[in-house]
Image (tube, rainbow over all chains, first blue to last red; front, side, top):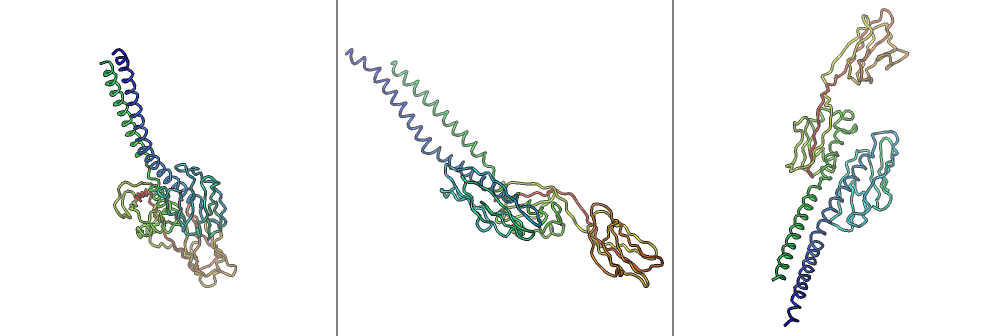
Length: 146
Length: 223
């Protein structure tokens, strides 16, 4: 009889420990399983939007007014990774395309450039050198991403 | 009984922790929603405004100076051609709040403003130098080009036409032409000829005086 009475607090404490462990486990599961990945994706989508818009702005701003000779080299700062993955920025048919391993984070935005820009070409890799070069004469200007 | 009191306290603590977590997640949700700054809308609006006021745009006479007749002709498809980012977007372009172009219904969107001047040209004005009486005519400020028609009378040779001292036309054998010359628009210009004595004829200077109004260009785009 005395032995069993001694066991009661031990069982009680054990029960409490079990409840706390279960609670913590369920909390971690909820946060990591649902809330956290969703936030990560939302934030990454926003970063991806901003990255592409900033890159497009910088490219558009690097084309100088009409001049007899144009030679501009400008570095564009891009985040190294979006959602912990490297990505590429390509120029396709006068538009800027962000290629991300996750298709949901890939983006495309047309570029607004003067008519004398005859070609936009090249590719940037996010963790490499990202430079925009503008070369040309009075009538024709080329924009090269390298 | 003592064990049960512990259990109640534990349940209460867990409820509090759950509450704190829920509040924290809600705050984070709000912060995330507020961090959306519509960068693509902003890019499209900036692109439209920049292309509209650029020096080489069909809507301007020079950088930040809109051509009034081109503004009247402006429409959404021309804006889409000038600034592809806004091609299919809902947009509104206004001068001093007066809409010029509207397309689609704007739900939010980003607005950018540019300070511009709107230039319209007056009807043609003509000043004539009667060579037998005077030798100069004054063109007001703001005129950047004028057409000079030299029509010398008999026994008269006009070799030089000067604008504010600068030689704009010269022919050693004598001028008899009708040409457009460029003037400085920053100050009034005096067009002067130097005929000899007893010269006759006419020199007509034709120009259009620009009327300049300062306005605010507002571009709202919702991609």
